[in-house]
Length: 339
Ligand SMILES: C[S@@+](CC[C@H](N)C(=O)[O-])C[C@H]1O[C@@H](n2cnc3c(N)ncnc32)[C@H](O)[C@@H]1O
Image 1: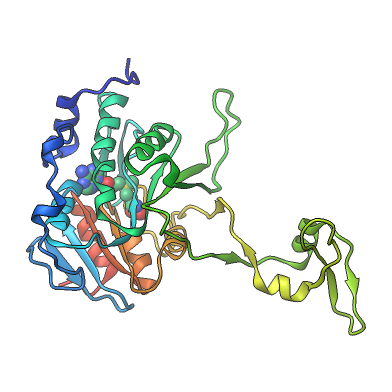
Image 2: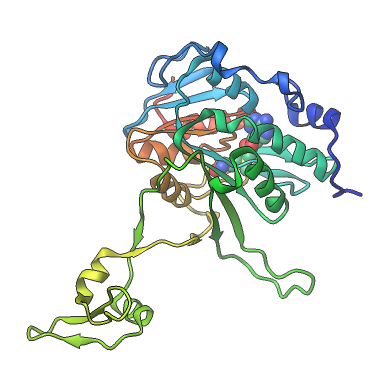
């Protein structure tokens, strides 16, 4: 009964402090065309609920105190064109728990799966109108509801705009469980707003041996002792040119969809004590993949502000908010330079 899927507008509306209009009703959304007044995010913000911080790093950071639906209403009324190259959304995962840690807590407890999915859907319908044509939406989820979220995202952004399912794989204590194998990954679902969106390729270091193992080819040496293998060019041209191993290894290896990044351990320097805090390394990789210097990133449920930290350290600009005052307080302290 707990996990039966049946949408109930009334419950979703009243749950999790959805202070905005009823997301189930079409007319509830502010019309993009009629009300935007055309500020750029670089301008001073007209709302007293927005704090502009000037961290030591480059990049401008704006923090909104309030729920994601209020952030959305504020942004859509004031900013045009749709300003974000990346919206990173890390909502509660439908764990059924009160998420608690040393310096904060938030509820991830729901009457049933249908209520949760209705809540998710209400935001999915909002995000596309805030994305630049070449922007990306990334939704962070896990096995609890990720498969349903994929379907809702396809509906909002288009199945053909789905780009990747990235697996964030982490280590941790493993139990010899009989009911479920140890779950040690989260999923990042990535949609592009349109065909105009392109990634900024990332390469990771690898060794000569890893390269040779992947190529499965005979290694030759030239007269100077440099190692090389044959490069292929189309059908039948298997000995087309030389690939020197030192150059190939120096270029690095293009990343794939499985990202091995450790979770934040209890004594890590970056740990701020907010529950479900994500590693900075993860967010920096994502921000680097989807944006370039000077772009704008929005994290509407920012928690401890990891995305804003990543954006600021990478010379991007960030807008973030949270309905939890602890999250806003922690993020401001973490970013620095906030009045
Ligand atoms: C999974 S946590 C985000 C963790 C964050 N990525 C980090 O690294 O710290 C989810 C956050 O969503 C916030 N939240 C839940 N409902 C919200 C809403 N309607 N508007 C804004 N924030 C919300 C919670 O307060 C919580 O901080």
